[in-house]
Length: 384
Image (tube, rainbow, N blue to C red):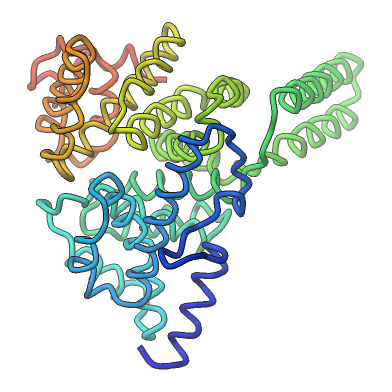
């Protein structure tokens, strides 16, 4: 990398990660509007962001050194390092005047089915595409269709949703949600009243105002995605939401409920992030799950199962060390949830719609056979 491209890379890195301080080049969570008060949560977020953007710098400037540099990263944080590195791979190609298709080909050639961080890497690619295409969901869909491993396409949607949630989504308190809900409800009633009076033009104006209020949430692009692509994107948004509300998850759940039809996907993403960020203290995620009920609890636990699966694929020895330290009752529950996810993964990983079927299978209890999970039998009842 010559002087010019190195300078451009530094500009890209600084614009995304902000100023990093100290010998470890620590990332400040406040740059992203993260204002958690719990010191344990704040320290964990700082560690995760630092690992992620260190990975991004590696992918952006020197991807060939990835395997060497990962050795210095704590196993707890290594998945985030790989996710960030994947985010930097395509812009690294652009700096070398390599077009998208060739950069994508190199990206996929560098990954194999047996790569322990293959899932995190496709999510990281989706994160970058969120920057490249911002609110242009159709462009994202076109890029996802160009993957050789199309079964991972929905992970790009997940990464895109995380980017929107982390960088674009407004930081709303419950009182803000109440105000928005009231405004939208009043405009809807006004539109219905106008139609009853035969004033179609006024009703249309109220509808436009209602859409304007909803668009202030900046999730138009996510909602323009179709089928499971939309659910996966909101799963990613839920993962990002956890970083802002992990010390007060009730606020995050309030926002998820406000999103109506996308609630379940958001809560599932929160469950995934809760377990993934504190895999060394899984009691935190399960304690939050116990505060939920019904469908919300089911989706949160689905997220926990997915987190355990991804951790197990990345570093089973590290995950085993974390679970071995748990109290017997909780350890048994974690092992059951991991076993369920592994069962589903084996039954679905060869399918074209792998990610969708894996999510749905992890939402079921451990009653379906491998063959039934692979065929999607019984899943109709749990489709949103």
